[in-house]
Image (cartoon, rainbow over all chains, first blue to last red; front, side, top):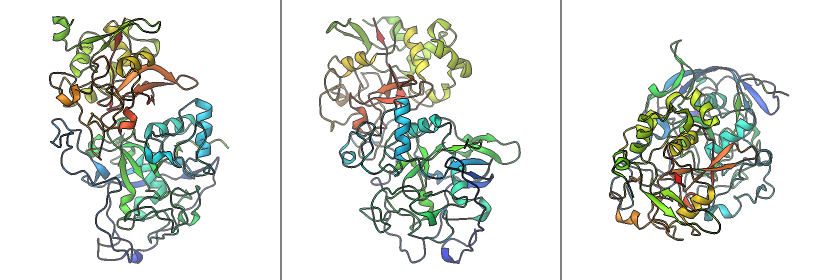
Length: 319
Length: 220
């Protein structure tokens, strides 16, 4: 670390070196390989920002064992919630070069997928989704074709990427594209200083939505060009949470990958688990209490109004 | 009537669904298939008897010898919990081993809910085995004697248990222009009530071994 936790402000951190941005092909940009430090990282709050009381965007954070419908501890609770892998020491891994979508997958692109495959459109039969979120057949809400598709679960995202001859990024790939290699110690995609105009963010206090950036909820992809990541990808932080291919682990021993060279090359997780890793945050909530709060974990089946994704490929895309 | 052999293998009681509207009568497992019952299949040659596996199932089995999900299935769960982390192909082979098949969409709907939103009616506020209030629901044993009174009151029109919540259930119904997805029904302990409604259809790749997905069988 460039400074000890709490002993310096983020503005005193040296600016990370600017990497070279490659040439986009078919909406994808290359990411050179590199080292990534996986695991929760706690940064000092952004300059001039007083963290509010602890908040959890989806109700009180679960504490202790899960309870049954009578409020008693479950006899056979689901495995402990390993949100953020916060209990795991950071581990350094290595990622091979790959290509990543410049933007989150848009509703108009997802609509093409639905028409081509017969896959069901984003729809949740709950009150909150009725106004402005649910699709009507294959039609997304009016005038939002360039917004990221949300109301998709992890399986939907995986199905889209497979159809597009792509795949979901591993968490290590996502982090490399968003924050560059570990040695640069970058805190935000655009640098080390928080910039409220570089992303579609929310607020750390209720109602957690905020339109000071021009958008109460989702924004068209690429609306915040100054927030581009080290290799030119847009909206990595903010707008919609992005699914990764990885499930949360209770131990790094479960991490799969080539360990023959002393590091873990191209780490990935077993194909099933209780929580999937999501990154980047959304228009709901804010990172200033802790930039590391862009790491989260979702149940893979739930469709949220904040959950979107982008895809990657190992091979260069066809122009 | 449940035979002693069936009891010793942990097999489920079956419930008769009468013929209706030109459709044949059939029977359906009263509960989701338990870990114990699935292990009976596994220990009695289920993975080596080719006649139990469809062509697609054989192809899947060739690249997943022995099912590959054994660790996930067992974990440290009690034997009378519903088996999870089984692919569509494994569920299909199990039902064939039992002389049955996975339910069609019509069979599942009729036996679990008939024309209701939930097996017990329309009330989505019942404390069923699903995700609510920011908490996981309770994964319930398939054994009715251990299921609590509340859960027993949540049975469907024919007395079938856990049609909504607990674990998702594989059905034969396919989806997509190429039929590449199969349909899961009934939601799970990790889903909100809306996913556990009878009319909710969740697409899944048949090779997926999800921790929230099990199944039950139907018989002629």
